[in-house]
Length: 305
Image 1 (spheres, one colour):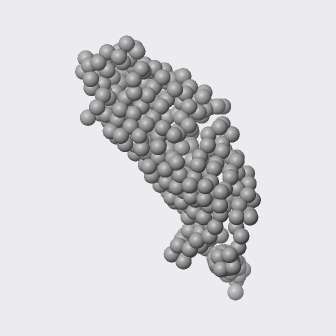
Image 2 (image 1 turned 90 degrees about the vertical axis):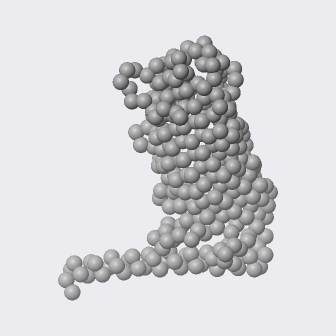
Image 3 (image 1 turned 60 degrees about the horizontal axis):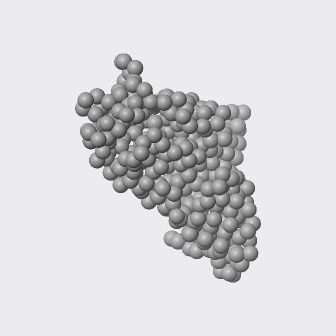
């Protein structure tokens, strides 16, 4: 056997060993979990340790009211009840029930654990797969998020949202901030801006966003449709030392549908045409956005219908 053939055989053997080891770990995990279920392991006693470990990993403070095991489709799950998550800024997230267990994923064979995660709480429902390892990530869906319960002041002071939101998430931890994509679909709510005395109701609010890369946030597309106003837009939010200082480079095509609203927006300095349309550039920072007419020749967002 040549040196190259021996080297290839060694690599194949190492890969086979790694696969067998990962599979053995997965089987051992399932067997150990089943054993704990069978003997009635007192999980409530270790709930504080689980909460402390989760809090340390996420930079939050966590309390767990109760902890137990369940089986779903022959898959063991750890079930936590009455969970409270406290962020340093004062935001609190109550979770009525959280489930976590091994996901049906081939990544286990590559030595990368994957966990099926499900949360049911005040903000809505989250379900998906958390990938562990060198580049942890999450892919899943949010359903029925209450927009008025989100801590929006931390990102955009004075912004208020109501309504319900669904989202599809595909995120990975890259450095200090996550990277990936978010697709948002809001329904039957309203937007209130600090510069306007009234809220703007909407029937539909859709956005296709990307995190990471050269920008903090890239708005691939944005669309809002309501009885008073419609808008489409795109652009980016740049990186900065703090979120408040993040520079804005956005384009917005706006249509005010009611004469009274046109007068109100014009009194705020927005350059509306006689038909209520405006092509705007949004600059400044996230904390202090600046609206101005888009420069001649600037690519316009697709006009709202």
